[in-house]
Length: 182
Ligand code: ATP
Ligand code: MG
Image 1 (tube, rainbow, N blue to C red):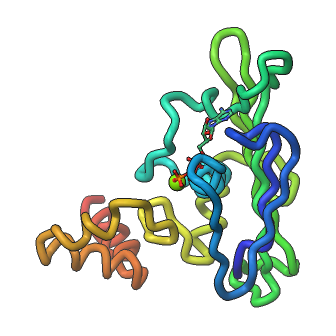
Image 2: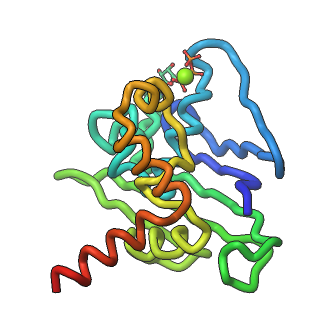
């Protein structure tokens, strides 16, 4: 499974609808400073709801809505991630799986919506589905700036935890602890 395409609407510096294509094995993004490379990564974290342990570079979610045009202030932002699922890593009989998130500004705050293949779902459902393909908020599917330095300066026990996390063992340790506590 890999990300085939990301579609941004009013997300951060993407003031209109922008589609970014990715390749199966390896994709690099290059561009001048401030051109929006990191905003693409922010879009992935945002859409997949991976922000509990990773930090989005925004103080509040509504800062993610495009604000670059004084004349036109959109009231929502949406990011859609299209996965190629031809290897069926997600046990769903579809070649393409789509996860999308939208936030809408309101008078008092904002609303946030998640969609799985076009159907409105909650964040738990998104995490549940992604976990089947080994994508978890605590995991290292997204390696942020500074993560590598952090891993180097960790104690060996902490580093072991990360390896467990990557190998998928940690989830079972957690379940075991939970079961023992019951
Ligand atoms: P660098 O090479 O310096 O890391 P980058 O390509 O990663 O740069 P980003 O950090 O992705 O750049 O983009 C930063 C740009 O996004 C800034 O110009 C900032 O003004 C713009 N930006 C961030 N949030 C918004 C927003 N809500 N509306 C419009 N533009 C925004
Ligand atoms: Mg950057």
